[in-house]
Image 1 (cartoon, rainbow, N blue to C red):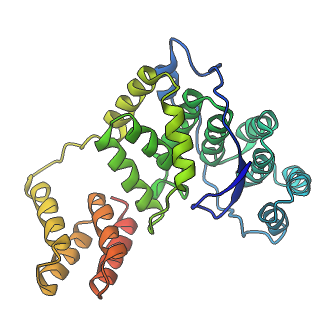
Image 2: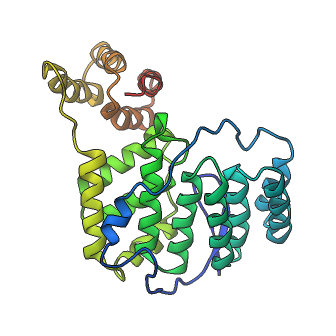
Amino acid sequence: MKIIDWLFGGKKIQTGKIQRRHPTKSVGQDYVTKCMAENYGEQDELRRWNSDPVFRRVLDLLNAGQNVKARNEAEALAQKFPDFADVYVWWAKAFLSDRNYPEARRVLRDGLSKSKQKYPLLNLMGEVEWKSGSLEEAVYWWIQGLICQQTRRGFGEEVGAYLYLYHVADALGFSTLATQLCERVDFIRPGRIRLSSEAINSLTGLVGASDKAQIRKVLQMVEKKYFAPKPQTGSSKQDDEIPALIRIAQDSSAGYDARGKAIQRLAEVGDSRAIGPLMQIYNTELHLIRLDAKDAVDKIRASGR
């Protein structure tokens, strides 16, 4: 049994050989319909992991791999903060680290019935189903998480659903959707948050043993509903301008002034399509233009467009 370091969040979880599990509740004749239904409603949540010093106790235990103590601490916190999703996430992660999938599911379902926020719980439920061997159910939960995050300003604070679905889409040949999902990851968490190679192999390997026809239909609907280009009102001049500006910004043979002006204009327009290319500049360039690109990304994110 190996320990994998998940590159987002820095958490270590145990994983072994995944057993293919026959899909149950969320897979059937109405699988696509159920996946695309808006089954959960998000509420505003101002609390964070650092809102109360008491949260640090369970986080320290989780990071130390003391899962039994972490579970006990999280269970006590759930009595005190019954509508705070993070408490149930920590509790379930302590079970997931020990591969106790039934208890992880129980905790997450309890959290879904009580918490203001839903998407952190939905995303982790998808991870539980992935680890227990049902990609169809994992995709259902990740899409539910994505649907909730689409309603949040800036798409929320987690990348899990977008990151996992990116690898599923890529494995099934949905290259455009995969690129868009990956760009959404970089929009939410700039800095190339990615899975480890072992995690990627685990996830994409499960794709080959799953009902690809059903998952393909769902991904097609996700792409059409959430990632298809939206019709623009007024002149199409701006639509033509964005790709041209991106090309100039990415052209390392162009002068600094020309690239800098293109990046500045992208920041002014505030089109989220520029996030991915600008983050690529930030992550690969060595001179000051990388800071221009990062400033532009911050302005685009602040605009919420």
